[in-house]
Amino acid sequence: IISTVALPVEIFGSSEHFILKATGNSMIKRGIFDGDLMVVRVQNTANVGDVVIARVNNEDATAKVLAYARGKYYLQPANDSLDDNGKRIYRDIHPKGDWEIVGVVDNVIHSPTREVL
Image (cartoon, rainbow, N blue to C red; front, top):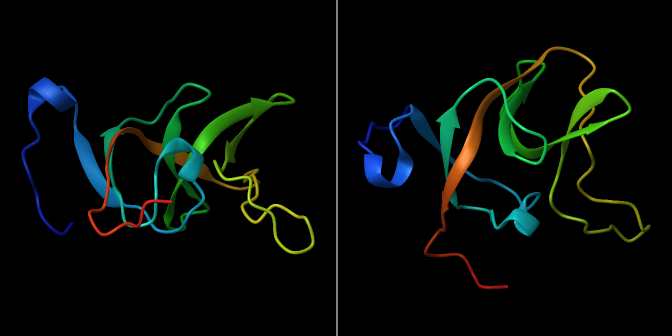
């Protein structure tokens, strides 16, 4: 925790929130860019299609879209960029071990230093 701030209830509601800084470009199709601040509502469940903050195998948190197919939930990036070989740079995460949802992204505060694409 870097600091604690009070968020306006009129904008963010009365739920508990935390703020994470986005790193990387896996969520650009959802408007989340490297350096943006994600305001995350604390909860351990989500709906398919929500942008969630998840921890997989007790590693660092990741922001991805919660998806469901073939009877299983998985985490999907929102960036279809391909490498030089035509393979997706950002791949779906199909957790095989322990994983948990720690929150749902409610709002994004864009970094003032981000270049407009």
